Image (cartoon, rainbow, N blue to C red; front, side, top):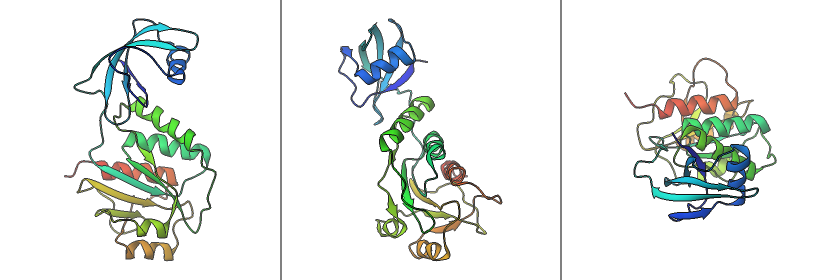
Amino acid sequence: MARRFFTDLIPPRGPATLSQKLGHHLGRIVRTSPGDAVVLFDGKGHETAATVLEVGSREVRVEVGEALVVPLGRSPRLQLDIACALPRSARADWLFEHGTEAGVSTFVPLLTERTNRRHEDRAHWQRVLIEACAQCDRALLPTVAQTVTLADLCAQPGVAERYVATPAEIELGPAQTSRALLVVGPEGGLTDRELALLVEHGFLPRSLGPLTLRTETAVLAGATRLLQAPH
């Protein structure tokens, strides 16, 4: 199978010089050679076959072919939004990478009583999402929304199927509709006041199992449960 590479804009059919950044990646990082087949994808569901023509010191030229009628990339079965208090640096990268592979559509960084605003390297986050999409053959690039407080989140237009991960009698199961929203709190957990606010705004408390999970693990566990096909 040809390897997939992200580009903001897929060039029209015919010879094309790739952006310097993508050209560097193909020429110097993955070391493609003339004649190699690749697939260009834009993260919006479009994919096109291309053949490497020339690898230069700073750029790569390709012959762009037909759009793929049956794209290699796949899409999750539902739109899944995860609002969570981001852990620090490398663990946040892990969350974005594996959440993308699991099928999360939108990550919503969340400020809670037990978390503070941290430095946001959104350009770096975008690179993590793109690399994860290319690796797992995902068609649609997820997004990282603006950071919000819990009150901001509750004030947003409601998603019919909304949950909060917390110790509860009922375990989280597969989503029953085409869109779901899950809130995952910080390492210290949500406060009683925060949990009451979420429940007041229609979030259903659901358990992720008997063990205490780190935030990034809880995101992956919750996403996996919701994205399973309903019985």
